Length: 228
Image 1 (cartoon, rainbow, N blue to C red):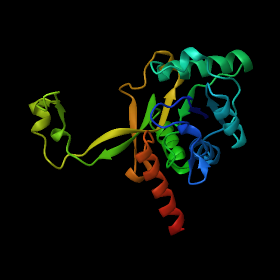
Image 2 (image 1 turned 90 degrees about the horizontal axis):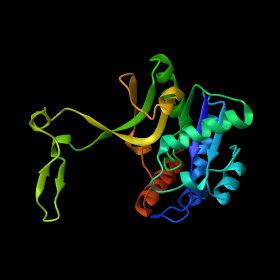
Image 3 (image 1 turned 135 degrees about the vertical axis):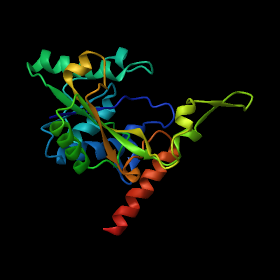
Image 4 (image 1 turned 30 degrees about the horizontal axis):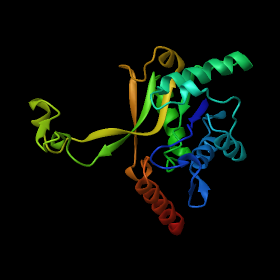
């Protein structure tokens, strides 16, 4: 299966996030190395608009066969548009088409090769349209509220959600793994009735967006290395 690692430059909250050194290694390198080590992945492609990210990606063993155009590197750019661009360019430049792909966000450095392989196995076993990684939510969903500018509470969910048993578990997408059939991407979809969740541990589900996320991910890596 083709692994795609989309890595846009120009991070607003955390400068040069995708190549920032995380425990001595660029953030994006963790996703590249996990993809290369995954048995179910046959090719690892990084797509970026940033030349420095491209060079780092190549140094860690990924392919960067073409750069991302500026119009797909905006804050408003949709992920499915990027995925379609990559699939179309691979077909246009190489004559190669892929029926599915696994998308690995570089901001999930704690996802491991075994997670990728197990998600691919679930995708194959269920003959799914998509498999997307999720993590358990620690707080009951019925506690969630909107807060107005006046600090007033507004309910997000209706009473049927509020009446659910306290012990009912909810989950949220952790951003680490998206396995999608190409047909789904060209329909501008990621979910159908034939989509499945791949459940991941919370300690593998850190999505690096802020310096606090970055430092927490680094702490987990150092703790794990100390335990080995």
